[in-house]
Image (cartoon, rainbow, N blue to C red):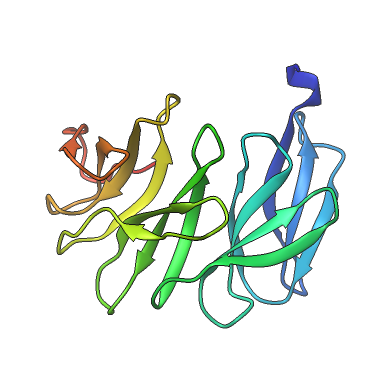
Length: 175
């Protein structure tokens, strides 16, 4: 409804571990949602603002968990292979793009339904493909890949087809 009702989700490091925290738009008014002894990373808002995706090491390896604000529940949503992290909801909230490593080695961009079902791999390069994010219309996914030798930004259709590099300056481009 306006900038002054905007909330910022962040991870804060403490002596005891990490906290999932909401801040007012000016960085004040911290509200701790969750305290974890193990690592939590990369909070991402669901488009309706009712939940957050978080990468959690609660089970000893990175997995995607969801935190629902209404009931303060925190539950595992996705776990693919040895690493599942960095989720982003599609603009309509029906899908999640994320990074996973299955079979060791490199990471790929995957997509699943918002409930964690029907996970499918979109990229299959012998490189690390990470940090997916959706275009505002939900038709494309941007991601970082080192397939050209250094991290660069790529974009592909939401079904994984037609990947193309979009950054050509610098030797380390991400997010």
